[in-house]
Length: 457
Image (cartoon, rainbow, N blue to C red; front, side, top):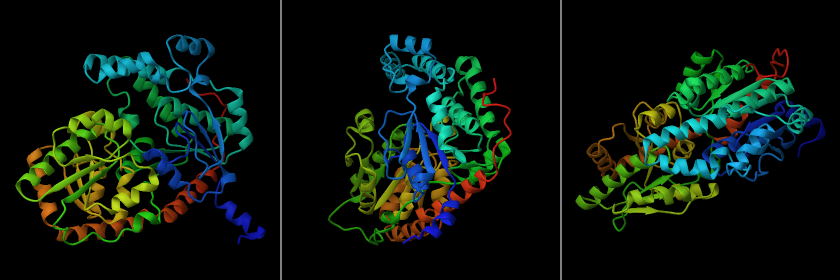
């Protein structure tokens, strides 16, 4: 039991944090799972969030929320014009029927895709209107520091506005290299990229430090922006460490069970289809192999047809976060994939997927397929947790997958290495403690020197 006299020292370890983001605290996406795990155990009276998504927040981690819906982001004339174009004012502008139709056509026609990116950039770069109810709420909360995973120009400006209005530092957390890739096709004649870089530089000027999802990203971002960066990937709780080690020899009466858990967007489905084809070839020539895919329902509907006709592929149900540990424990081999497309590999170059720490903690060998230079692939290799194929050639994938499936004696070694790495670097309690210390130190730097609360032009 915590006595009253113990409360003040414990509270002092946790600064009052205002989290700014699109999605609220929940466990529906990799980003929100990482967010919830990082703030695990935080005193709820020292945590608040401003979010823009129409999603319903979870109160597991945070109970103080302000919903700042997209309809309030725009000056009145622009809002009315968007409503006339069919926008409902609830979801992002990209969700309006006209833009949805363009996006769907963009999947089939490159010229339409180019127009779609210009339209998205226009919405992202539009002036951000900040109602007094939002600024008053933020000031009344009186945070010590603002934290945000950002992800767009609008969210970057919103986080900077929050820091200025509350006169506190901000700590940005980058999980993908979106500042270098979001508008890399000269959207709006290069103006979109220029405004994006200006918004990020403005926010970094209010930050005593930053956070990155991997060591290579931390090094690159420290060089790029001139402030120190700490590494924080996803952390995992004890449930992921509960699975027993995999069998040294697979049962003779069942196929080797490959399992993929995660999304299929960003071109990941193509790499996964290569693995599926390799597994089918192995099943025909030697030993039976089964690939089970657990992805979001919308991904199964959109990409499932790409796997039609490949035997041994099964699309399981979309998993809630609490179901993932048991599914990973049933696997013989866990699969991680990334896209070889040039624009996507630049975007994910420094990223480490939310599921990688979960895979490691499950104690199962990992078969990775994606560009060799990606941080996620390097992470699997450095942990000694499996085999990574860094080339798109299907025959190489089949050869290496066959090697892993037949050499079941290596499963235990890979699984043991992965679990040991997760124990050292990803146990939730350890990560959360270090995370709180970094934010406490950032808050201790005091308010940035600000002339006023206005964003620079």
